[in-house]
Each structure stands twice: as C-alpha cells, then as structure tokens.
Image (tube, rainbow, N blue to C red; front, side, top):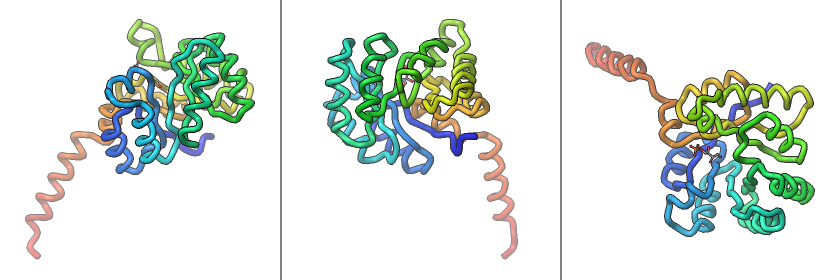
Length: 218
Ligand code: E4P
C-alpha cells in the first residue's frame, strides 16, 4: 500500500501555490509551457519562486523535441533547484533522454501519456513519474480513469517504482477515482483543489452549531 496520496497543483501561478501551501496539504507542483506562458513573466524566475514555496517536487518541462536538446534543457532546469523534476514528452527522442537522465540521477516525469504502452515504455526507460492525461481523454469520449487503472495494474505486476501522476484533472471525482485506484499523485488546477474542501452540509451544519451555541444561557 502507498503511504500517502499526494496532491500537486497544476499551475504556474505563485499566488495560487502559496494559498494551497498554507492549507498544509500541498505536496508538489506541475507546470507546462502553456501554464508558464499564461503567467507572462520570466519562466526561470517563476520556477524559482515556486521552488521557494513548495516543499516537494516542482515540475518544469523541456521545449526541445530532439534528445540532445532535451538533455541540455533538462540539465539546466535541474541546476535551478534540487526540487525540480524534468517533464519530458512521450516520444522516441524523449525516451532516449529519460534513459540518459535517469543515469545522471535527474528525476523525470514523462508527460502526454495517453496509452498503457506509452506508460510501460516510460517506466522501462527509467522515468520517476508518468502523467496520464485523463481529462483530455474524457474530452474525446475515451475513459481517462480506465487508463490510470491499467497503468497502476501494469506497474504493480512488475514492481515498477515509477509513480503515477493523474494529470489533466477536471473535477473532484477524478481525484476520488484516483484515490480509490491507489494512484500515487493527483495534479489539479487550483479551482479543483478548492472544491475538495467543500460541502454545503458542512456549511449548514456549522451555521446550525453556532446558532444553537448562541442560544445557550451562560
Ligand atoms: C500535467 O502535468 C499537465 O500540466 C496538465 O495536467 C494538463 O492538463 P490540461 O489538459 O487541463 O491542460
């Protein structure tokens, strides 16, 4: 059994990360080129700020598509902070880079995983993490969580230590299903993270408790 299910925030927004960190249940951050581009600031500076807030892994993705370029970028990202995990796309060149980086002890997260064979290859190449994108599969009438379940079974069958990051999460039920399947990590937008805390019956119940306490003659 896994000791803990980890919550990562899927954002490059420092304010959101600081707010989630204050809650005391944030274990890491995933960024990607789109998320960093949204911030409109120097990505190196943004990642430095994220690393200063978060205690766990901070994912930064390479832009190159050839192995040599990926290796160059990965080594540069890794020098930034010891928390950096380098995201490498699930391509042939990417897998060559993952093999090399695992020999250099630079942690990798294979991203854009959409099939069980892609996850298996990433694990065989020595990836520390794989990221199946469940929401993007659901968007195409495919079953994203079914992919996660298959990956977990395959990794269990062979004792791969590669951790499964359930990515492209769209709503809290993705997080619930990920937890039921025993996925290692769920990475989610801040809006989904916020929803995990909420239930209207909690608010109503608290309101009632406080109102009743107020009636007590003391
Ligand atoms: C994962 O690491 C990716 O950054 C992310 O989950 C992609 O999600 P999206 O499909 O919402 O863009």
